Amino acid sequence: MTERGQRKSLVGVVVSDARDKTVTVEVSSSVRHPRYGKVVGRTSKFHAHDETNDARSGDTVRIVETRPLSKTKRWRVLEVVERAR
Image 1 (cartoon, rainbow, N blue to C red):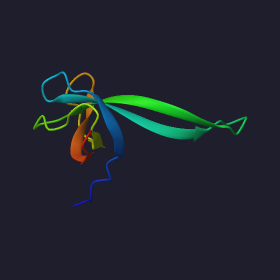
Image 2: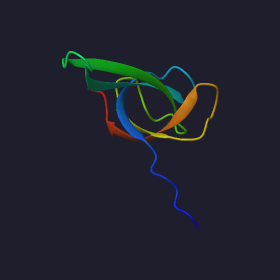
Image 3: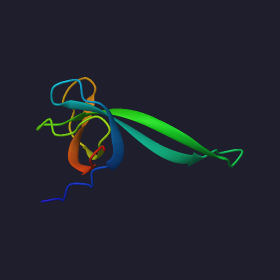
Image 4: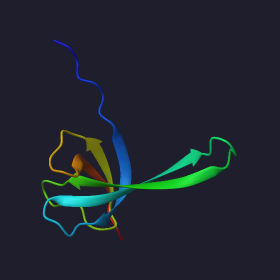
């Protein structure tokens, strides 16, 4: 039996929790520009499955790759890292 590969894991902030069992997570990263070398900030938004509706807007969460759950959902919430104040 072969071992499954490691799934990608990202940490981001919940920007929307309006839908049932789905949150929108914004992940920020810093990328060095290929030609000019300047560090540029990038943000990406992911739709993640939140089975328990636990995450709230402003919370920092860890999301992991999973099989496609809908047209846009390819991630699921693994844990709430930090609650919003």
